[in-house]
Image (cartoon, rainbow over all chains, first blue to last red):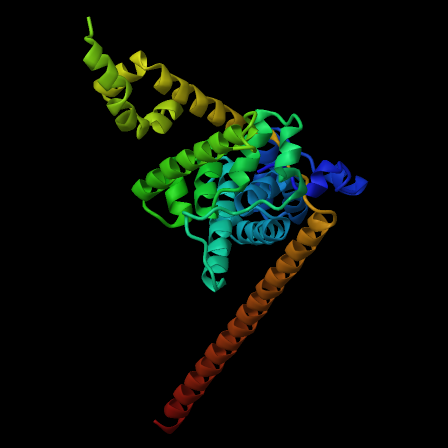
Length: 216
Length: 129
């Protein structure tokens, strides 16, 4: 998933937002976590500011749209805030947040899929209607990394989730399985299918780009 | 020296079988058996497929460092929501402290009253006895 349309405008954040969203070195982050666990509200706020963009990025990559990503992020931080005292610190705080984000996103997307009259199966693809996904624009010299991100965005959400969590965020199979509510074996099978599908989508894109592909 | 028939078989039939393990092999997730590894070593088509998967995985991994800017005002909204959650929590904590205090006072008062009654009854018994 590439940045949303607003990101390409390079002006989506206010100056105040840009000044307040900043990642921190691990040691400082750890100190903030400790202070937040002791109940210091200012530390909670600083912790949110330090991790906000990375959490939003993950949520956007998992959900594929701004509105759902914002909902997931809000739920993630509320849940993290409520259970901060239970955070044992045996994992990195960001990894712990990623796990909550994955869980919240899975819950939201599953709920959406259930309420939709036509639910999406893993065999269907989502058409990316954002302007920069237009094939004509793609032909205009976008690099392979961008095409990979766009192909990922077009995968069905169940397949996209496992690729994002494993191949982008490097979470272990067991953790992915737990947060998505499936068995580890199922997570591995899903990941295999997802990688194959992504490869197919990219190969189809390549074929489309070949000279004469449109004529045939 | 491999015979022509074996080479043809390795490049056609085995490609289909090996294709199943290529994504995991490229990602380093799984060991492939000797036969499949031998096939990949000899088959340019499968080697190209492994290389293609590795390129995809490399690009995916690099997306980790690419941040997506959140919508304007969303951080402020989140901080407000957390503030509200904090106040609610503090409110319920205060209520719990008040309840415990009132409960404690009630228990102490009741105990003192009971002790007073006991003392009074003892005195009465002593007076009448």
